[in-house]
Image (cartoon, rainbow over all chains, first blue to last red; front, side, top):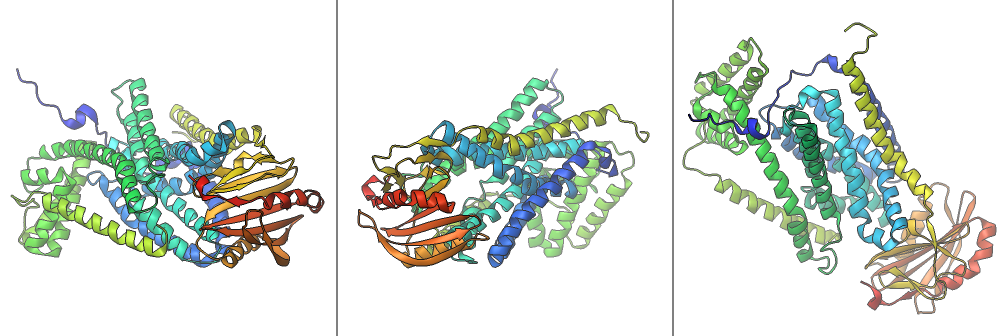
Length: 431
Length: 191
């Protein structure tokens, strides 16, 4: 007898789709407590901002505008991570707000106190060398992880896969990163002692926003969030195992943060391009790759689950076998959209995106056991008709064109962007 | 669910939320409280130079203790805070590529940027035994007076700020001035 192969999702990352969130959330005590915490955080951050606004209004406005703009692509990428089962925008906003208002508010006094404790129990030298590497990550990773716990307490049903934990964790990290960057920029303005100057803000934006931004809090938050996701979703495992994995993930986030903040490679290589390259390659890249692989695995496992749900329909008008293959990977979904644009124009590209979204939504409804799927089937058919009219009836990936071109293009663009940024920073004197 | 009835799920949820608040409280208030319980000052030898960072050293004034919470020595920069009773004597070394006048203007702006603080009197030139030339001035704030001095040495600015109540300052300034004159920049000490 041949055992039926189990889905990857069932083996290591089961998906437990929940219903859409409704007003029932307000009946949960956690909702009101978290709301109060957010309000308290907002008041505290407003007080800090008011001080900056009084002393450096132009610099504050510039910093807020620049980092808000930076948040847009990050938000888009994070919210797109879970293309198949998108998180409710209200919860994404909550996660972002936790990072920006609550986690920052508690981290400011907490990190400063821990840094002092390191100096008191160790020495000022130890605090100068390792204070930022130990105090910041310890306090901040805990404060951010609590944001994912807050989401679970408010809307447990919305954390139904490891990938959901990744998305909420990354969103908490993004909120933290943006607010922290603004505070750092204003600190740089104050330290420069040139009054309401914009140059320190621009330098901080380039250094912290771009060069450090990719492997910053968003990434660490994603890793810790994956652990909380696992803890919540893997009900089939005993509590000790789930807690162990969750703690390992938070520890991984902490270790990545420690490595990034550590003085390793900082001394001895100087402040030139070589030092920057060494820091990026040895301190930033390993955690980035680790977390990228983890996110990809979590995504693929979730995609396995949802495409299997769609396959049960056995209706090529709703989804064809080739479309199922395309839906499984983000890169293939993007290829299918690009292929549609090349063959039938920009409207076909948009239509393919809508079709993929409608198919994903249908898959979620099937997995929820929704008895009447008419509404969601109708939406898929509507998008199919649009595509047929545009002369591109199937959202497929073109054959014979691997992803190497995209990879090469991405590597080249990234290298070019880093070179341009490095030149800009050197010109500004921030290098 | 009837109004006013608390379900088991809500109770668990409340417990979870309270734990969340407790964890945040431990970070925001517990760590600072623990920090407050530990002493922050330590004795420091006043008969030999103290390495501040960035190749700069100073001989601490007699009777000074070092505050480890605001003392951070590093290779290219550094800060040390000495306390003489209630008087703060802070020396900060930072990389800097401007002139002495620019450095002084920068420090003045930071002082006057604090609500209630203003620069008083005229500025004087000062020199250290090690050959550093600088500018010195005074400032006042709510219930406090202060003195500042700025030196520039080979890509570094050395900022000295002294603050305390007028009576305490009058008592300790001679020793602090003597200490400031021992500021020395020796680049081989950096790193």
